[in-house]
Length: 166
Image 1 (tube, rainbow, N blue to C red):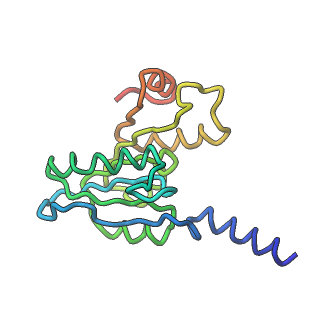
Image 2 (spheres, one colour):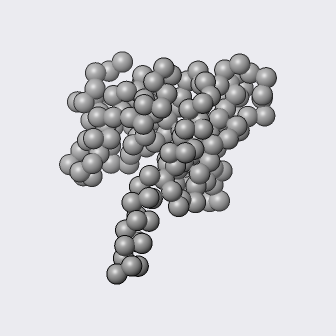
C-alpha cells in the first residue's frame, strides 16, 4: 500500500518535471559578445547533445552554430522542471525558438513579452485522425507563437485549419 502511494506521488511529481534525467538550462554559445539572446526550448526528455538517439535534440544541437554565426548568444532550456523554467525566466531573451509543441502555452506564460517561433516536430501532424486526444489542446496552445514552422506541406495544410496563415 505504501509503495503504491509512493509511486503515485512520484508519477505526479514527474508531471511537473521532477525526477527526470534531463534538466538543462545553459549558455551554449562560445560567442559571448553578442547582445542578442536566443533561447532554444527543447522537450526536456533527452539531453543535448544526444548520445545517439533524439531527432529533435540532434536538430537543436546541429543548428547552434548557425544562430551564433548570425550574431546570437544561444541559450538552451531543455527541461520540464518548473524550478529550471523560473531560473530561465530571470533572463531577457530577444527571441525564443521552441522545438516542443506542448510547451508553447508555458512559454507564453513564462516569457509574455518575448516573441517566439514554434517548430512542430509532431510526426502525425498531417494525419489528424491519428492524433492523440490531447494534441488539439497542444495545438491550441501553439496559437501563442508568432510563427509556426511545419516540417512538411501536408502538416501545414492540416494546421492551417486551426490557424490563419501569418
